[in-house]
Every structure is written in structure tokens, then in C-alpha cells.
Amino acid sequence: MADITLKKLAELLNLSISTISRSLNDDYQINQTTKDKVIALAKELNYQPNPYAGSLRKKGSKTIAVILPEVANNFFSLAIDGIEEVAQKNGFHVLIYLTHENYLKEVDIANHLMNGRVDGILMSLSSETNNLEHLDKLIEKGIPLVLFDRVSDKINSPHVTTDDFEVSQKATEHLITAGSKKIAFLSLSRYLSIAEKRFKGYSSALKKHDLDLDEKLIVSLTNSLEENYENIKKLIIEEKPDAIFASVESLAMTVYEVVNDLKLKIPNDIKVLSFSNLRIASFLAPSLTSINQPAFEIGRQATSILTRAIKYGKFETPLEKIILKSELQIRNSTV
View 1 (cartoon, rainbow, N blue to C red):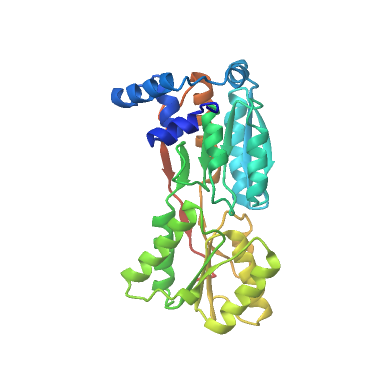
View 2 (tube, one colour; view 1 turned 120 degrees about the horizontal axis):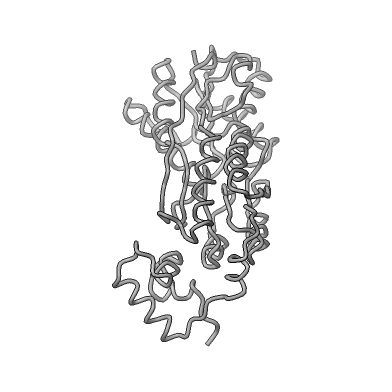
């Protein structure tokens, strides 16, 4: 029989990899019945842990890897500041890896870090990520992993995010109160939980105010600036929305560009609102109504969870989900 891995045990018992790992490590949060089942099967199949990877992690590199989809987004720049503050206080170096929104690049980076090159990983998923096998492998290797902002509820690791559903609902209601009835929603990803929650907040507000959900006003875009420009231009010309909710700040900048080229006026002809931590949002013409996420605090809290896990050899609460509050900053683009 091929080598028995944590993943194989998880498949045979229909449990998560993290549950298998925690059962074998006698984690107090796993009930005894589950532990007994896992240990019995591991003995029956002669499961052997990976001693090489384990010894590397015990030695420690005093280094944390941060895997990001981009840094042009001001959110991630602020998050890095929070990450570095906590890392430095705890004596860790920080290595930044960029996926450039590319799933295969993300997998390559995860594989590169697989054998103990770092003590732990902080990660925000790419917009293309729809397969989480590379993250399961990291967890199987026992490498502490904390996801932040762009997370997936399908992976068993701590998450630090914001109240995407609630604040998106509030933002959409602001547009409705401001007189909008035909609100378009722009998104970059169909796979990430934050994209789903932001869309659900938007659709919930429409339903609450008896407005129809028009599929023609819901646009999934890509990482190509040229394609996004053309698709947003087509949306505005053909569907004539009276407001646009951009779920990512880069899309709001493209909306401004398209509206200007079409000789339309914000907010008279079309209102614009976006998730954005841009420092220049208040200086745009007109100033952009934005949903500001506590990016620095997200980075700080995610790193605190990770450094504690590295120090004590396990997460205090492995499936911890921290949700921080975002702020709707109303400016001239919607008023």
C-alpha cells in the first residue's frame, strides 16, 4: 500500500485533515470518540508522521511567510504594516510572496514553503483560487496557517475578516435611500467567501426594499484592466444603471475612468460606491464613498494568532473566526 498520509486518513474517516492531525496530537477540543477512531485507523494502517518536516519546524526559522494576491491595493499595504508590527515584537522576520491573482502561482508558492522554510503562513487567497488542495497539504504538514480578508470557509484554519455581509447591505441601502433603484454590482471573483458575502449583502438590501435582482446588473470581471474597462463601459451604455457598487477598489477606479470618457457626471448621472482603503478617496473628483476595512488591525490580529500558534505548537482555537467591523464613509460620489 502507498504511504498513508493525514489526507488519506481524513478521506477514509470523512473528517478534515486538521481534525485528524489534532486527534493524533491529543487535542483537548476533539472528543474522545473521534480520537479513538483516528488513532485506531492510524495504527491499523501503520501511519508514520513525517519526521523530517517535523524536525525542521521544531528548529524554527523565526520567519513568517505572507502570501498576497497584490500590493497595489491599499488594503494590503496597510495589512502588511499591522503584520510587521506584531512580527517584529515577537522576533519574526516577514517574507512577502505575491501571487498576482494567479492560482497556479499561489500553488507554487505553497509548495515552495512546504518543507519547513518558514514557521507559519499568513495568506489572502487569489481571485482565481477554487481548489484548496495546496492548503490542505500545508495543514497536513503541520504548518500553522491563518487566512485573512480573502478566505474560504472550506478550509479548517483561523480566519480574520470583516463584516462583509452587514456592511454591504448597509452600503446598498445608502444608495437606495439616496434615490437609486437600478444598482449594478461589480465583483472580481466567484470563488471567495468575501465575494459571496458582499453579494448577499447587496441582494438582501434590494429584497428588503422591494427592488428586483436584475442579473444584467451583476457583472463578474477579471484581472485585465482592458477587459474590465470594456465590460463596465458596455454595462453603463446598455443597462444604464443609476448606481454602481464596486466590491473591489480597483474596479471603482475603472468606473471613474469609464464615466469620465462617456462624459457622464458622478453622482448626477450615476452614483459610485466601493470597498476601498485608498488614502486619496477623499481627494478624487468627486470624492469616493467608500467602505473602509480595518486593514491594519486585520493584519495585526492575524499575526497575533499565528505567532501564538508557533510559540505554543498549536492554535488556541483552531477554527477561530474573527470578524472586525468596517466603516461606511459617505462622500460626494453618492450624495
